Image (cartoon, rainbow, N blue to C red; front, side):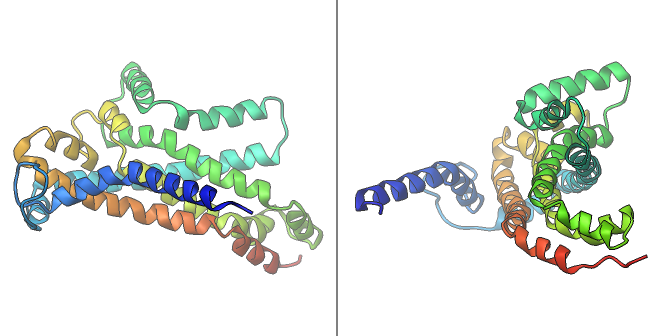
Length: 274
């Protein structure tokens, strides 16, 4: 049984960790409602005018739409490539499979600036003009990792007897995938897609290297904070981005926290016999 002192230390450590992570974010949110342009502490009052002014910024709206497009396409690419790679590594045993798995995970561990520099060099060498598509390709490089990790983890926790039983009952490969495998990994796919979209939506480093003249929402915030008059609007938009980013992360956490739900559905789904 834990002593009282140990419990106090654990709680204090948890509180300090959460404060270290979230107090700076809370300060940005507080300044988003500060009526003064100057970021002096404590705030001189309360206002929501910066949200309205930011919404009427044409460049901000353009950046928001571009970020939504980039996030959607990058997530779609990641779902296709990440799930396909996870199936290949899990289902087939071949020489170098562990190396392939390591290389698939590596991009998320590399500093964003290294990935951005490498992508910019590759794009320049290929003669491809910078556009929203180059941003999507850049974001897909690390979004694939998120989807791959979620799907491969779910596949490894799923007993192979489910697929074997489906085949024994007369189902072919496609029916087994549709009625057994897909329901089993459905929440992993959705969670991976939500996390990938959240990462893509607020990515700035890779965007700066692959965007050219294209404007995204993180890039607009990055440019605005360097101008004192636009800083309150940047704080307001940053507060909105935090909320929008928390939603998919929360949903993904809820989905991945209950894998037994989809496993139970997969066991209950019987593929049609031949």
